[in-house]
Image (cartoon, rainbow, N blue to C red; front, side):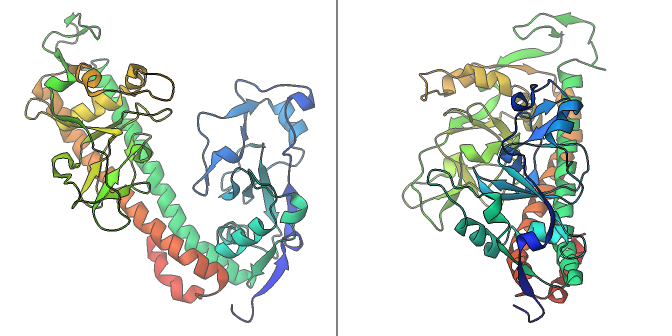
Length: 423
């Protein structure tokens, strides 16, 4: 560590620790509300960011004042106290929030500790290990405030703290910007698909509808079973796993929120059994077909880092072109995720979405000309999303490699100046 760096206990570097972990609306004479101020908990801290998902609960402003006499502010660092311990998020947005279960908020002293530097330092191995060393509990480790504030923090000069935060922040800001753009493109594509292919806006013959098993559709359109419009409709095989080499295997954990990710993928031994007949192609659709909680999730493959296959829990779907355009089929299937979730059968813990049930699923098939209109719009959008996701993974790897070296002083900020190009 560089000589001008030193260490201090966290309590010497903070303006405040906001800790209301034992509070609930009932203890304060009220209850949760259907809308109002979001109440965040440890489960809302994911991948070093605040994820305000559909599981949020709310309280009214009067309850917020009782619960949070000290309000959260821009620059506060959130830290989970247990289940899991040590996850962080940085509050860049000063919108009203209520601090709920299993969370601390750390407010840095403005003259001694840069708040975003603290956010990154807490992610480094030095502080993570020191926090774990002061934790208690067997089933689920947790840390008390009295122990947390005694953790010693590496403290570079304040200007160097700011520079470290700027370098890592530039990478994170670019990643977050790409994430938001991906979300916008996905929402725009779904909206346009529903307008054109569900509500028939501006479709020729949209006033001349006929009844079908899926409801009214334009007279020139048809309804077919999924197997009639699919060239590939098959489950993967049970892989023979290897640690290195082989072929990338996509599993249930890789299919989430309409996207295919690769962090949870494993590897299959090609010498034990070839997977070439179940290789995944860009624009294919993957459907989780077994399990509890993940069954029915649908995603489209927007890019691939290398050749890949799927395991036996995932169904691979590819359109029977030229009859059906792959991008149309993908958006149609992703719009039907709730239907897939309801189609499962079997006993508790043994539910399954069989190929035969998928094969019989009815799909609206517009004329080829209508599908081509969608392809001309959505094809470039899909490619853009894939490019953004690939770039974000590269930036994340750079950030993850730099972070422990910067917050420990192993790498000087001047040596990391190349990352400014990321902003």
